[in-house]
Image (cartoon, rainbow, N blue to C red; front, side):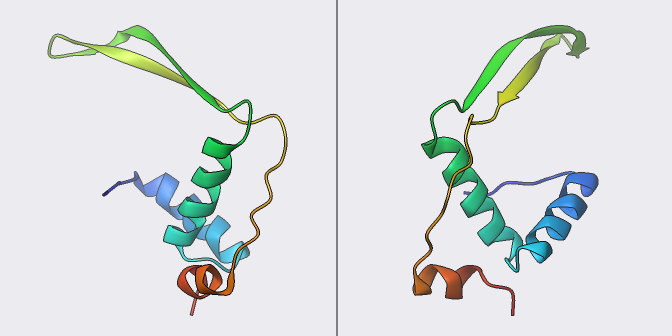
Length: 85
């Protein structure tokens, strides 16, 4: 799987991952696991007519984060994989 982020998002993610002593990849894994595995996580979609480009209608995505904090208990092999050097 490959994902890309705009410059601002990447800078913010690097800052947040450094605060957690994680690589950006480890940060993404932890955050997405908690988002996807906790009750209340949703992404709602709807058309966004003002976003039309070259005849393709835009979409609006509303991200609803889970209602409670998630706790990741990482095993040593996960920590080794994710930790910043």
